[in-house]
Amino acid sequence: MAAREFVGIGCVVAVALVSGCAPRPKATAAANPAIAAYAGPRTGNPLLDAMAGGLVGGPIGQDFSVGDRRAALEAEYKALEYTRSGEKVTWQGKTSGLHGEVTVGQPYQVGSQNCRQYSDTVYAGAAARTAKGTACRNADGSWTPLT
Image (cartoon, rainbow, N blue to C red; front, side, top):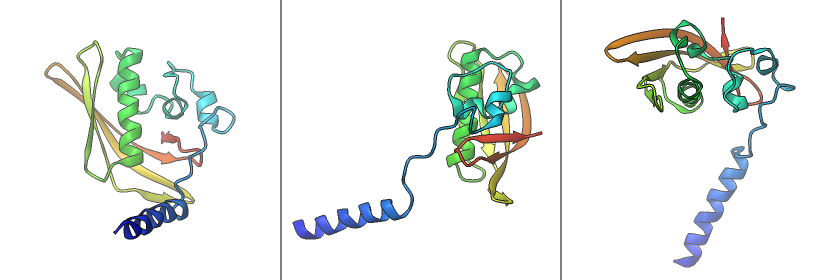
């Protein structure tokens, strides 16, 4: 039994090595001009800053604190990078009471880039604001919203 378990673990390791589980390159301003060009509030996370404010960087997020923006951008990134079409990723502002959800569509190819449509709904009390957009994934693992 122990030998069988060992073989199983070896297969998992082999699959992980073959499937490209190597760490992704870090997003940097040098690698991604969107990070260098973005003049809005920074989150301190290059993958989030590369989104140039994402949908929350527009009118939907005009009243956001830096913490709200970071929570919303983290949800946008998680939705774009990891979530299946139609699933929601929720976020909650730390002190403002703002919260929201991000929903993504099916990934599709534009040239060599993966792209996805997504929507971000922000709730402030009973009021809801929704913005829709498209973002494409860069080689460094960041996402750039299309305008």
